[in-house]
Image 1 (cartoon, rainbow, N blue to C red):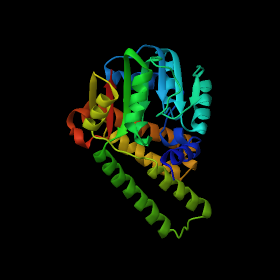
Image 2: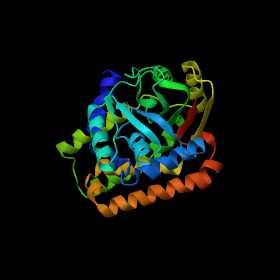
Image 3: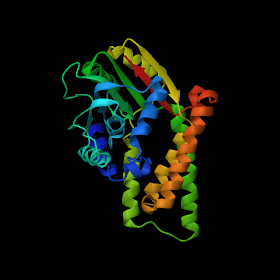
Image 4: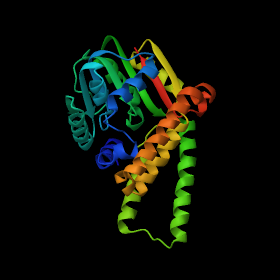
Length: 289
């Protein structure tokens, strides 16, 4: 299957429960996004026109608008269902986010259209990351800033795979001990879980992102790694909510999940991002100008 078609299909399906699996809370989206971007660039960004590329459910676009950090906050995604979900999340947050269904490798915007572009967890789903960065550079006005976040590193993927794999083994052992057999619905769900893994097309070392950014025409390039325990906790929640959908509707389980994720994020910002070796961290963070 064509990788773009695969990604569109997977993300169309995931749109309905993506926020639950990643514990995104649009009631607090403005402060969350302001904090995340401040941690990356050292200050809160201020933009006249911002674009969230491959926006998913609208985390960056809705957050920038809700925090008052962009006069206009636009968003685009290949998945029609993700665009619809972003529209619903923007309405829930009480903000206006102009939306376009679009391929990140062929953005439907004029040259120099934005002074801030955010690509969060986007490039590893794109068949040609260089082409996507070239498009981001094209629509970014001179002097503007592009922020690339949440691209997986090879070391981080191995760690997450090991931890989530252990959780899978534990859950499956409990099911076998209880004599539970998989229903047809569960087998279909597992098929989609495998498809979602296949939709992750790349991992990146920091120097690879730096090289791609340079080839795309960026001149001021800062690339580093971040997050250790936060991604591991998110990975476990992603698996458990996918395996036990009732967890998403359980307020206590969701509150416990958010508490665990917030604790892990604080641990990373205070300790792990300073002490854990860069090659062990799980995601790329890049600021490109």
